[in-house]
Image 1 (spheres, rainbow, N blue to C red):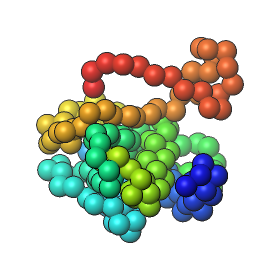
Image 2 (image 1 turned 90 degrees about the vertical axis):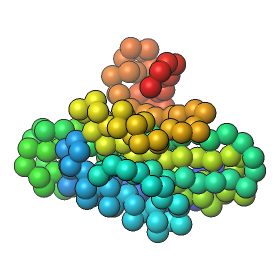
Image 3 (image 1 turned 180 degrees about the vertical axis):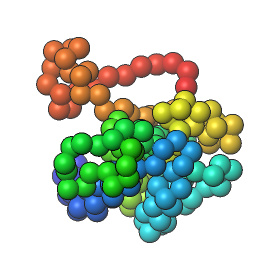
Length: 188
């Protein structure tokens, strides 16, 4: 597989991912109320043939892709909750739920990890180790990560990667926003 082939595969997923993200954006759910979001994520992953792992929480999703080659377990994490904010963007996919909005990009985070999932599954024969997918509820309350850890979501995980889109980061470094990345080491 070449980078160009992988890019073509990703581009083929794009219409479905855009639709998924816009649906999440239109129907946001607050912390620990992410029941429909959880259902939609599980359905997307199941349709892609990705193994859902048990998670003893009412909301949130844990899934895993096992590579054919030995290696570490690495996790990709997205947050799934919305904020208690009234959307006034006028977008055709603006929140249809009064007083609730994905104003912090969690709809994008979720869709990005969902985009990676079928690509990883498709190329599992070349994958070393496992990739665990964590769709964390209640990030805005600060309780979802603790709940997932307590439920065992990180057992056996050697590294975890998450993201948070933050356009003002570019101003901090004086670079254009597109492609800007920042990293931080430390405890979860």
